[in-house]
Image 1 (cartoon, rainbow, N blue to C red):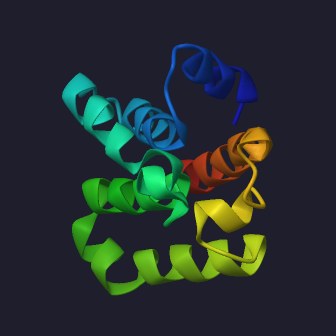
Image 2: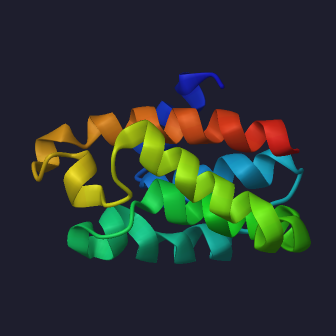
Length: 120
């Protein structure tokens, strides 16, 4: 994944969850501005530092692409991989409790977008 697209979306004001969904929709040849707008509800760990927006959006995307596979295997594998790779699924932990560390989330977004692109 070329990070320039991620940065472009970030500069447009999109957060991690919106970026993941936008990239996923682009990957499957769909557009849905209302869905992208709604994904803002998952930003910054649902705006409370909880479940990572990148992870929750990737999970939503898996269900959008293939609900049956997502239910039976892919969603569990995604969560396990994410937690093993990054040590937590919580936004607050991933940025070490400091909003200045949010650029780290862009790296997570790039890694997850690469993973999602393999599914298509």
